[in-house]
Image 1 (tube, rainbow, N blue to C red):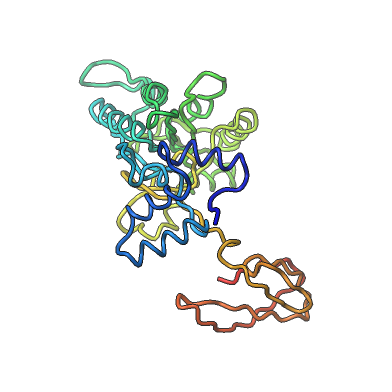
Image 2 (cartoon, helix red, strand yellow):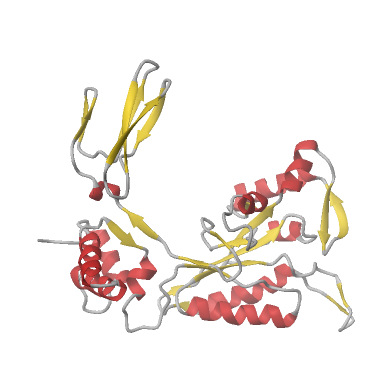
Length: 335
């Protein structure tokens, strides 16, 4: 029996990115399942899921697990807090270099760094601001090849109430600046209220208000930059924390480089895919519709219809629940 990708381009990607030298798809699966197994039974179950591509771990897992190279199996990281000191800035930069060297992508919150032009009392000089220090991290990213074959990935975040937010918004308005970064603005509830009410919005650092700005103009600056340069992104940072189930013990200020995974300081995440079309293949009939895949059924339900949706428990024992829908598309997943 033949396993693995069937399209030539998929086979090439799997071979060049996720396998070790001399490995075929089957042996890659054996390596992964053999490393992650709890016992023999678990090994066989995991091997079957991987071979039939019902479950596919993310690329870093496939590439790193059980491999001879000392790389990370985690895709996404967020840096420890970058405090307003040279020691903290350089320590986080050193940690970031090691993370990227081993194949991880990393996000940072630069909001704790004092604004440009602020006085540094110990040196009787002026701060260059968070955007300038981002260039140190950018240079590290450009210099270090991530696990030997690709450039690292980074996300830089600055809160919308930081006094340097306008410089940050336009920091990538060319083809040469901060090319090792994605950037996102951490938008607060306070800003959205000021925007809605068209009230002056305070830019502050450590509870000191530096100036008030027009929130409509600031929002327009973000939108125009995003339209013209696809940067910055938006993180509704207060909403993220409100919905965080671990909000009682952690505060999220940044995301991984791609932006889909908010994480606390020193947080990390693993990614994977469940391929539903390879999990459920039995034919199912609902009304006069028969489909080959019970996991992806789109039905246009009228006001008079009643749908019986099977909700499966972890032991695959069915229980039925009546659902009604009024003239709308409904995606039915039998899971």
